[in-house]
Each structure stands twice: as C-alpha cells, then as structure tokens.
Image (cartoon, rainbow, N blue to C red; front, side, top):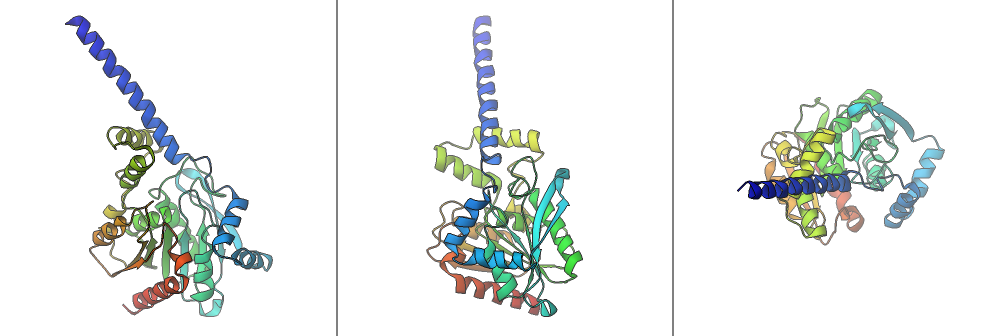
Length: 317
C-alpha cells in the first residue's frame, strides 16, 4: 500500500507539473504573441490593400498637421499612445468617437473607421493603441478586460480636449469586446453610445473556441490552468473578462454588428451578446457573407448608413 501511494502521489505530482507547464504555455501563447501591432509597414500595406487610397489620406492629414499624437499613463503605470484628429468641420462637430482596434492590431489597422467618423459623420476622433500593442507599452495582451479602463481614460482625455457631450465608443474584434466590457461600468454622462463589431462574449469562450479549433483540445484542464496562470501573472482570469456580464449592466444604447461568415469570433456571439443587454436601446445588423472584421470592407455604404442612423436615433432618444 505504501509503495502504491508513493507511485500514485508521484503520478499526481507529475500531472500537476505538466498542467502548470501547459497552462503557462497557453497563457503566454495567447497573451504574448510575437507580433502585437508593432509591424507598422506590414499593417500599412494590409490596410491599404483593404481600403485603397486610405494611407495617402492618413499621410495627408499628418502632413497638414490635422493629426496629433498624445500619451497617457494607463493601467499598471504603462505609457499608452493615441492619435487624435478634429472633425472635418470642427465648428459643427457632431460629437467625439473613440475607435478601438483588435488583437495584435494598432492605430493604423482601422483607419477606415477613423475616416468614416471624421469625414462622413463629422466627429472628432481619438484612436488609442491598447496596452502591449503598437506604440503603447505593456506587459501582455489584456483581451479587453483591463483595456476598458484605459479606453475610459482616453475618453476622458478626449472630453478634456473637445468638450463634446456626445461620445461614441466603436470597437472591432477585441476592441469590440473592450467596448462591451466598458459599457457596463459606471461612466460619465457624455458616454452616449457604443458600437461593437464582431466582439466575443467572453475571453473564456473565445479561448475555448481557439483551443478546440487550433489544437483540437478540450477546455478542461488546460484552459483552467491557463486562466489561473493569467490570474497569477497579470491579475485577471478568463472567466471574469466577460462581455455578457458587463452588457447585463449596460443601460446605454449599443449597435451590434457581426458578419455571418465569421468563423474566428463565431457568428453565434452576436445573438449571445445582443441578448445579454437587457436594458436600454439596442440595434443589430448582420453583415451578410462577411468574415471576421470584414463587414466594413464588404459593405462600406451599408456600414456607414447603419452607424449614421443608429447615432441619429440615439440623439433623438
């Protein structure tokens, strides 16, 4: 019996060590990607390929002093970067938009939304690089959870700059999750509207999908161990980083957008997120045939029209 207990204990100890190693590996794999929005030339080429002429537009704004850079100290004391630009017609600006990028992206990757808000909708625009992305410092990707606190700070900075009392936060993918997570917090009154485009319902659900899709592995026990590793290393766990939990507390208007061909943040997230918001005005738009984060590229006129109509409705509420 003693020999059996020694062997059994040794097996358990080995399994625990293996699980700790696997959990730490998965945590690092997800939250410390080799590329995290720091390939600016590659991102310029990718963005130009999706939206021809947009880099010339952006460079022209910079040349003419219409884009300005700023930094602030974010969650954990890290320096975070953003650029901002006045509305095309500043004297009649409709409000302020904060545009939030996705996983391993940066301020370059969604210039289409910056141009939409600035030129088509006549909003002032603030565009941050999230923690550990682009020109911002940081320890690791935060998957929107702690990022929501940084986006709130940038929103407050934008309000200090322009003084507009109508602000919309618009995020794509991880930026959409950031937007939804922010929407459930206590916020100043000038946060009037949110637009989420293809965001996940929770970090746990998204990583569970990725674990199965990329590795063919079940969530238990690897994802549990990875979440614990994240909690120990970075102070938050995958289950607490929940869009749906935050949406349940959200009372302000939100537009939900998702492509029905999205197999990365799978389309079913749209209904789950939409249903989680039980208070306040909401709209949903399905981008037919669009894959992940491609709704604007595939349906630019319709995308702009939906956002414009949504914001008009919010102002009339």
